[in-house]
Length: 178
Image 1 (cartoon, helix red, strand yellow):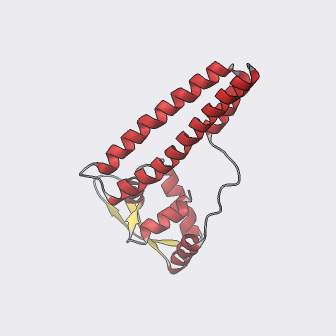
Image 2 (tube, one colour):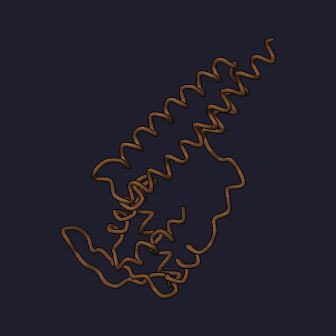
Image 3 (tube, rainbow, N blue to C red):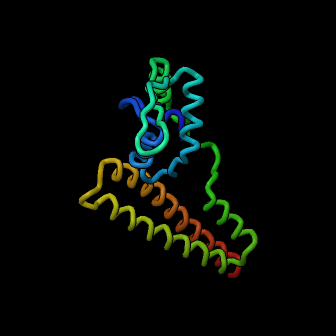
């Protein structure tokens, strides 16, 4: 994820200070990893340095001064370029799940590997149920539904792969021991 571009996108809706940007990020991308405040302010500093945002003033509520930022024309152009660029499909499998399954097959006996695959499949199925409940809740927002759909599609793909791998392990075991 490009934190810089997400913050530019959030600023396209209007001026905000770092605390508001962090809250908006976490609300608009509810299934993404929450941003740390330090990450927001460091990114805003780089965006300002590069001329993509400008500070528009400070306000003081019950706490410290809060600097508001505004998207510049150059920032809008950078955001539009990012939004217009097609993301290349990932060339490598970098999932921890994939690595664990491969290592389990390398170092564990077949029954231990099968046990891991079954347990992981159960965990994925449980998470699918949770996400389905999130997106079908009466209070679900469009952000909730879209992010749940994204996570569900990925979990579903993982689950299909786990089942296929479990079948392959069983086939391999039958061939070796027949």
